Length: 115
Length: 119
Image (cartoon, rainbow over all chains, first blue to last red; front, top):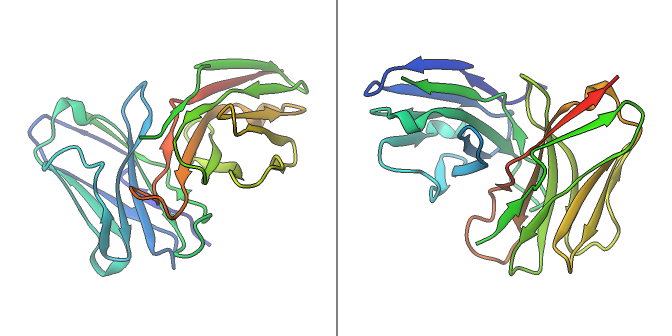
């Protein structure tokens, strides 16, 4: 079974540009989460999808970030326009919809550098 | 709001020896879940071990075990017979359990502890 995949693995862009990150969860996982780790700090929650619906987006830093999950499969996270403080590693995780002890499986992350 | 603290940014252990990584957390909830995740260099983060707060028995997974002290809000990870492959960043994480409000699904992480294993 394929794990959670993320694309691209690295992205270097200039301030003001747009970047779109993609996450493909494990097949059959209805829960999809986005997290971000800024260098030297904790991994922070961004948002949570259940199927195609946003269950919780309380962690989204501002309206420059837009997440979608059309059809309840893969998800995209777009940053527009990117700012220097958006640099970090963006992780995606997925889990099954079920008992609350479900394990979240993480992708390898996308390292975003904004110059 | 819940917080997770890992007070050891870096740790080092000799191969075959035992090391303990510390984690404390703060919460007003009585039921929750605690996790240790491991992220090897340039690789994906994987779950090492998890603990349900309502269970008194400490979780174990092969060479990995936890010391869960609910009253002290402490959740340390012990790695026995350390191996070179244990070298990684270790993250402690907290997750609320129903029926508590807020973001029940998401994990709250500590800053991580970088573990080095010396041959």
